[in-house]
Amino acid sequence: MESVQYATKTDLVSGNAIAELRGVTKRYGSVLAASDLDLAIEPGEFLSFLGPSGCGKTTALRMLAGFETPTEGQVLLDGEVVNDVDAHHRPVNMVFQQYALFPHMTVAQNIGYGLRQIRPRIPKEQINERVGKALATVRLAGFEDRRIWEMSGGQQQRVALARAIVNEPKLLLLDEPMAALDRKLRKEMQIELQDLQRELGITFVLVTHDQEEALSMSDRICIMRDGRIVQIGSPQELYDTPKSRYVADFVGTSNFFDGKVVGYQGDLVSVRLSDGTVVEARSLHQVADGQDACVSVRPEQMRLSREEGGLPVHVHNRIFLGEHTEYLVTHAILGEFLVLSPRQTEMNDGPFNAGESLTVSWDAGTALVLEQE
Image (cartoon, rainbow, N blue to C red; front, side, top):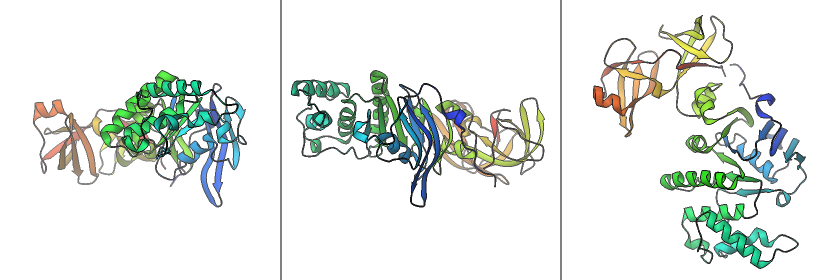
């Protein structure tokens, strides 16, 4: 098995960063939580750290916040090294997964708590004005005197956001803030967060394991694995041009077929799959004849048909999802994989049924040869 390909310093560092990680490593005893992280966060962008539990994304966030100190490397804010700067002295605020609100305080008292800790003291009238403005921004004007336990989950999240933005931070860190919300409310809050970020112009950094959340909200996504950055790019770049099977599998859904490179035709690589079928695929890296290859095809790029001319499959399962139907199909040698059929196809050809024998095909070049892991 070849080593995992990680993003390079050239991929990750630019000259106009509001925050940077430079060669940052974090160890907890013998446990390596983050390894040699190099990342530049641009002013005003919405960046997400995406990866499974234990990949190092929350550790990276906490080092930006000042809750953790790097074992090696530097954390910079506005070009200044802040390794030894306490969290409460950084122009950074954080919204936690559990919100960390004070239940014995009113909404206004919760939001103004940080302002009341500033020395020299801010006049009470100015605190009230800034609290009122923050409440209006998160659409909770008039809720000043409510108790936290009287608020819904979505309202509590807005209170936590208002408390985070009232200090006008340069960097707002979000540690899975929507994990406790139901699906419908989570969708609503994703839109509200995007609107809020555009309105305030604050740089947002989100930690999430939810790929849909990252894809829908982010300007850039930083994919992490085993404490390291694997790939970083826009949602579309990561979806259309993943560098590895890990990224293709984590960002969206993909089908994978093993094979060997058997030649080239223009910009396309010819790969012979294990059943003998030769497919044409794009490759973003150098490949050689006879080399083992992993071919990735997105389910929505595949077509099901009752006509000949593709891979012969049997429909194992059918799930109607409204705008499209998801089919789990089985090939005698290649095994099971997913196909998404748009509603228009079903209206023209009629639905395909479980147990039916069909063929699957896709256009040349929609498949992608991925780096081995």
